[in-house]
Image (cartoon, rainbow, N blue to C red; front, top):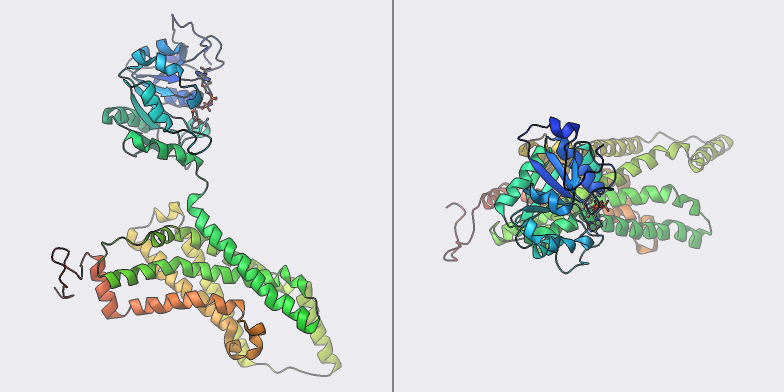
Amino acid sequence: MSKEVKPESVSLNALGTAAAPESELLCIYGTGDLGRSLGLRLLQSGYRVVYGSRRPQSCGPLPQGAQVMSHAAASQSAGLVFICIHREHYEFLEALAPQLKGKVLVDVSNNLKKNIYPEANAEYLQRLVPGAHVVKGFNTLSAWALQNGPTDANRQVYLCGNSAEAKQAVAEAATKLGFSVLDRGSLSAARELEDFPLQLFPEWRLPLRVAVGLTAFFFFYVLLRDVVYTYVYEGKDISFRIMVSLANKVFPIVSLIMLALCYLPGVIAAVLQLYRGTKYKRFPNWLDRWMLCRKQLGLLALGFAFLHVLYTLVIPIRYYVRFRISARIISQIKDNETSEFDNTSAWRSDSYYSVGILGFAVYLLLGITSLPSVSNALSWREFSFVQSKLGYLTVFLCTLHTYLYGWNRFLKSYAYQWYTPPGYMLSLVLPSVVLVLKLLLMLPCVDRTLTRIRQGWERTDPEDDSKKSLLT
Ligand code: NAP
């Protein structure tokens, strides 16, 4: 580690001297966590690094090979300065404006909360040092990720700034460090970049709310129909069923509805395009938002399906189930009764399980292909085949599984306690609507029109508003 270096006589230590003479010198203001991690990466990537610090004599251990001096002296010979200082301490930079004129300043700062300042940190920095070219960037990387290199999800560096040359210089450094660069435009995008690290699973919020809402609704629905109803009409307390039986009713219901919610917006979008006769009109915002969270809806739905599988697997070892089976056998022995083998019931239960297993297998496949590492390896056609064709197959198999579960109970009056249908019947509404609409969209005459619309054909001529024939 390099020690303090006198500001007026900066000496390169062993590694610094070893660096190739033409290697570029970059400056970092601030010797804190990010400054040190960034310095280390820059040195490892072949740059020379000089730190600007309030206390160059006593700023603590720095990466080996780095120099340290006062702010003004440090930036003198470097064209690019990383400002690794919290925004609250930026004021001192105003006095350094003459020295920083023409330099590229990289603002890496983040805030603790959104909208605590009237302007973005980078815009504030630009105001303090108007002669410099401020570029916002590197703020989405943690000191840890910088120190360890871009080996994980932290591969991207977002940049924005008003000077194309300045952005180019920062982009070159980021690329040399092993990151991929995404240019987000002018400095006015800085606030957006500063808000990135403050986001908390933004794309998961709506699907999570839907999942919690559906779970809560169906839990109370099933509780009322099963536990409360039995207590009121038969005086029996079966509240122990909440833990496994009720949970295992709610999870598949929520899973099936959420799976249908993944495919419903696609069908609605197709119907809307057919109705409008063009693909060039924007979808309503609610539909856009809904379509954007389909992956999260699907993954949550898969999670609920997984819980359903686990809860189903424990059924044979449940005390209640073992007690019921042995009690029935004992009573049959006592009464010298035998039960006939029912071929229809055997078919029903085997089909129900088999279709359920197949549905879950395709469901898993959908989940796996939505993982970035897998989907990146697929061509667009392969990805859309899996997510669309296999997706509808999953909806079909899971819906059939639920219809087989209901079997002939749809027609039995005892299933409708308190004039309400069982939860699984309610869960069938949306997937059935999706499947029927999808079948209608697959009709050759409808499919042909939709395909043409998606290839750019418009029913109404955009220039003179006249109706066009589908065959033109
Ligand atoms: P830090 O560990 O607190 O270091 C900040 C450095 O700023 C200090 O070491 C100090 O360096 C300098 N400083 C402190 N008070 C100052 C003052 N009054 N005037 C001038 N300089 C002062 O903070 P950090 O974690 O490195 O973060 C630095 C910046 O990077 C922040 O804006 C932060 O939002 C951003 N950032 C950090 C991370 C991270 O993972 N840490 C990730 C992304 C972005 P000297 O004593 O050498 O002057």
